[in-house]
Picture 1 (cartoon, helix red, strand yellow):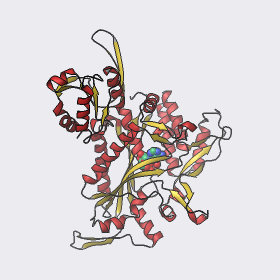
Picture 2: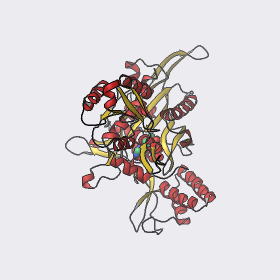
Picture 3: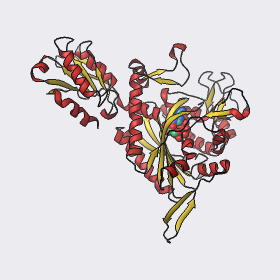
Picture 4: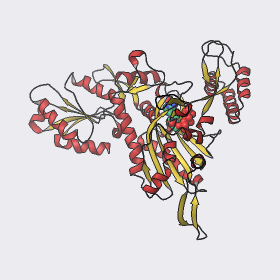
Length: 484
Ligand code: ATP
């Protein structure tokens, strides 16, 4: 059972420059966050790692960077204008709006906490069924029958269940007309679909192949909560894999396994990852699974793997009147070319911010121990895998004099072109180590008087706090070998 240290993690993010509330001096903007100097680097490292493993390490996957604004018909074709909504319910007294599934899930959690596990599971099962059938009257009846209360008013005075579209819209051009309405993309995937033939033809791609993309997406989440878990502006890392019709199941299984392995290789503990198969499939999917992570507040979706069939390309073909076909010159088992077809698509879609939160969650540790002299000591340490840590190496001259800063600067100059370094000469060395622990810096080196005599430095390892002397000219290669 993972301990709920969520509030501590949020405070830590603020204190050490990982994440700030957006426009904080104006009291923030709900469910919008800014990444600070440490967080932006960590986020970039995660994005780069995903990008490299998707594109550089897969010869048949290329990356693009499509615009956030797209022709409004894209969202009609994709089904988002008509279908991208969540059932919600308002409370008549408190005027608070709830997402129906969140309201019921919170109620089930309360039952579990009271030891009523069987009842909680039955309620969740029934909810899934009702959502699957879009039976809104049934959902309302369930909320009333179970006497599920508003968290503010503590009463059951509910409106009917209604659908609420999650897309943000704005106008393009100076004069507002209905035809000028554009949407802030709610997913990056459509930028890939509309460029499918551009990329296939100019890149001479052969099926199966993938197109990857990272970028901002926007959703007017009804109940945005849990810090960066559910934001109104967030970043996705998506890859659409185009396959021959009939092979989608096999590729779906392949990417399902592959993506879980990727998270494990990143350093996410295996026992904090699991699959959750969808009962209610999105309008475009013939199979879908979530890779869930055990966040401090429970198991939640980190990444979705969706077999999207040929839905999107077919829709774009219909709405744009442009052919979305691929010509497959390879032969089938009867020796005949596969010929023209609209490919099927398997999608992997992970939220960068959620990945960031999962990395924070498994890395954050509060540690206490007894020192040799019997006194107590403690630290907060971010145990980031070295390869993604925002700062790889801290360079710390023991004193601000006697030529030590000059040696430290030389080392800094030698290393900073290769990985992120941090130079610090203020404060006692113990205090500097603690600060580096809190920032998750895996290696610190200290330059002292002995360095002047034998050109060795003390290297200190974050994870076990062990220290040893190494030759100054070995530092760069040592760190490079540890972070590769
Ligand atoms: P949820 O059920 O949690 O709302 P979803 O099923 O709508 O998520 P997808 O449409 O599959 O999510 O989006 C793919 C990924 O994008 C998700 O796995 C998640 O990591 C991320 N994501 C989606 N919505 C948000 C959000 N509001 N804030 C942060 N990340 C998000």
